[in-house]
View 1 (cartoon, one colour):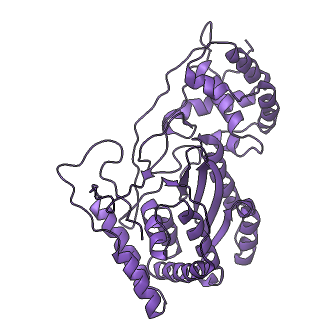
View 2 (view 1 turned 120 degrees about the horizontal axis):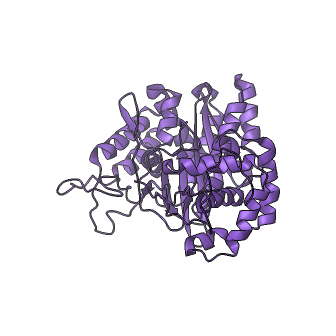
View 3 (view 1 turned 120 degrees about the vertical axis):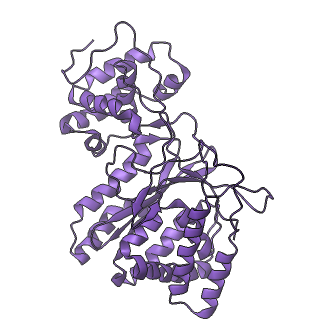
Length: 413
């Protein structure tokens, strides 16, 4: 076995050491600002095809702009970021705008309406960059252009955009391919990200919300609640700190160390999970990618994520060597936060976090009431808002476990 630096622990004797992953608890983290609980996380949605009619999108753009301006007047531009980072508020916002609450299209349509609406009101102090498909790849250029207009330094925002996209496309390997990415930022440099991935096999989409996390490489999505998926590799889980440190240490060695271990693993009899993770890893190709990481000599896992060309396969290869050879397990905990459930029309009552639900409705109602809209548009928006079902009483004490005491999404508008 290749000689490793003192930064790496001594590998297990004999064959590769197969370690049971540390699953860890599904903790719920609340961010509190001005006395308001803010939940950021992810939401699963079914993939729907089709397009929004032009006449509807134009009306959604006006309503979205005016509602956001009302929130800005009450809470400031950072208040809008906090709202967009809340999956429940975001989903209800899309419903008020007139879109199907349970469709994957609510993400792209709401973000598109916000981008178009805020483009003509620079006094709002908010900029929306990015979008779906090709538009998402133009995010850095759009950030730089907006920062030039507002006298901001673009570097930190471009870095935040790229790292958020890299985490959800490469560090969280959950089967969803990111195809929509939007960064919303204030003219003072605060930011939030809303991005979405698709899984064509299951026909589902997953949305990822970000709001200026303390770290990009450790629980960046904050409130993580919901049913876990299968065969997830979560390289930003809190319990995977040692695995991350060792992965970074491996990049400081010559790539031949990792390539040698990958070849050896492919010759061993592995548990099914590890066979799946190894199945599409070509040791020689991984070695070529790791040359870039080795040249960069990253100081930490965030630095490793920032290396161009280091994607899902290279990160998985490093994680597998760290786990199977050096005994530092990676996490398989799914970071999913919310899984919106149909309520009302199915005739099935769901427990509801009433305080969260009421705060969401109250916030949207104030935004609609304060929006500069014609009477008919305001009435229609309030009518859609009034159509959200009242919270059902929660019988008995709060349940423990995944999804206990969480809000249930509103019925279709």
